[in-house]
Amino acid sequence: MKIFYLAIFFNGLFGISLSVRASIFTAETKVDSIAQLIDKHYFLQKAKSHQWVEELYQIADEYPDVPLIRAKAILYETSVIYAQGEYDKTLTMRIDSLLALYEKHSLLYTILLYSNALANISEGNYSEAFQYAVKMIERIEIIDDKKLLFKIFNLMGTLYSYIQNYNEAESYYERAAEYVSSEQIEYDQLCNNKYRILFLRGEIQQAIQLFERMIPVLEAKQDTTSLITFHLNLGACYSVNQEIDKAFQCFHTSMELVHTIDNDKFKTAIYQNLGNYYYSIKNYKKSFQYLLKAKELARKNNNLEQLTYVLHSFSTLFDEQNEIDSAYYYLREYEMLKDRLINHSKMTEVYQSYVSVLMESSENKLKIAKNELSLRNKQYVITVISAIAIIVTIVYLLIFLYQKKRNAQQKTLLKEIENKDLSVRLQYQNELRKLQNEKLEDQFREINSYSLLLLNKNHLLQQILDIAAQYAGNKEKADEIFRKIKTMVKNNQHTDKEWDDFILHFEKVHPRFFEKLLIKYPDLTKNDLKLCAYIRIGMSMKQIAQMLNIFPDSVKTNRYRLRKKFCLSDNENLDDFIQSA
Image 1 (cartoon, one colour):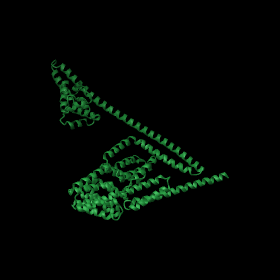
Image 2: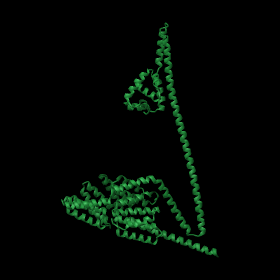
Image 3: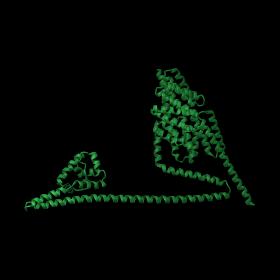
Image 4: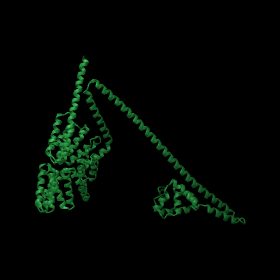
């Protein structure tokens, strides 16, 4: 009877567990659906996007035990605020409070770091945004969410473009491109960022060609967001290129498109560009009107980045009209705001520190990341196991232990295979090195033996000459015999064939020795090359004299001439120079 009640109890627990999991799965599915809507419309529909964000927070309140839902709500709130050029002073404080709680939760913590970086950009705190982005990149190796990886690398590219490190910006944009396809709207935004780098570098013509080529593609996609940004940037390129009419047409097209959407950030940018356009054609009244609209919108949304550009345009406008006080006022406001937004030295210092720390501890961080991932998986397994019946728990526990043992065995086997493979490769390399050394030694012995043979031959011939000289004048035919022996000996000393054979053996051990010398010192004679070869194989001056059939003093003279051809100083050793040639 007790067993019957226990069975009912555990079945109830199992049913509750399944019900909870099903409910959470439904909530996560709804969150993903809302996230897709925001991704598609957060540039175009401000009010609707904020409404969807509120729905995400409502789901997060319903499931407080699933912190990832709240993290995603924050992520999309910051995305909407950033896209709309708005400002919420409480946002970074709210994110900071969650960061302190979830530092050990890698994915959730990375999402919050990204959100905080984005929120700080919206508030105009660029140096703080950069610091959060650096922390985020340190954890990037354990993230497998392609959409999040795209957002992270795209943001890093944007931050580096702010501090004018365009090479690094391009590098991060290229990494972002790995996680998005050309059919996605995000790809169009990425192209805009990449082409804008060319514009900022001053490669105006190339930027114009790329922007122009992309606009028909965007029109076919009906990608309003990207069309507005592409026309704005293309108009800026035309302005710098002094193509004023084309620039105005781009700004006018952007104005027509922006009326179909709800985005103050785009409106501010268009008003500022139109103000700059009318300034360029000296219509100062209209220029002032559009710049004033841009300033009002930037101040309304507390968009400090856009306000900076507008203040600079106002300073230029008043300076052109000789209104010095107003020009100075706006210039001072611009400089103060610019210094607040971008602290180049601080951001550069953070980046250098990040590179140093990352290189020193990359292996440790990878191990920590793997341990965290393993721990997260185990925690999930434990949560599931605790919610089901005891019998099922025992079965799962046995499976877990078996799997763990199997993994350990597989790791041990894999380690043994790796060690064996490494041992075989090392043995092969040692054998190969041994064979190479033996071959080299054989070649050395061969050339030294050949040199010794030549030396002995010359020595022998010299002895014959000495013997023949003893009989000179003693007999009637002694002079005739002496002349014949002398002629025969001289004809056999150092023939060209013997020298050619010597070169053949010598270059097996010292490949391209003569070729290298002649390239650097083309005026070397054949005797110079012989002297260099004998010095290279370590012959003494006496041996060299015998090989060349000259006196040792002549060898000294030849060495002196060789030093002159090599332009050696008194402190440089001829033998060392030839050995290193």
